[in-house]
Amino acid sequence: MTTLYRCKAPTDLVCRCGKVARRMRAMEIDFDEVRVPFMKRDRPEVEELTGQRWVPVLVDGDDVIHDSHRILEYLEWRERIDQ
Image (cartoon, rainbow, N blue to C red; front, side, top):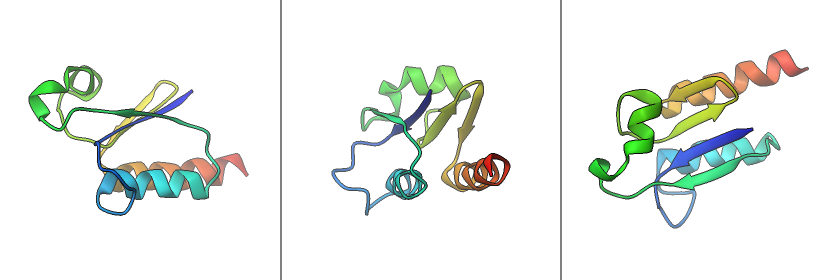
């Protein structure tokens, strides 16, 4: 199961979380979205996963990746090995 922890932005066009979500949809990756609270102090689940409270965070099986650039690199790597 793949889960994307992301902000509550109303669209995928205004933030890095949306950029990751758009790429995942374009790659036809099935994933769940968890919209986290706006205030970083209210994101204990993100801190438990990564030791920090920033989003986006991608959980793909046992892999936990944070930072949008790292997530996009991971998605490209995953696509290459899946082919």
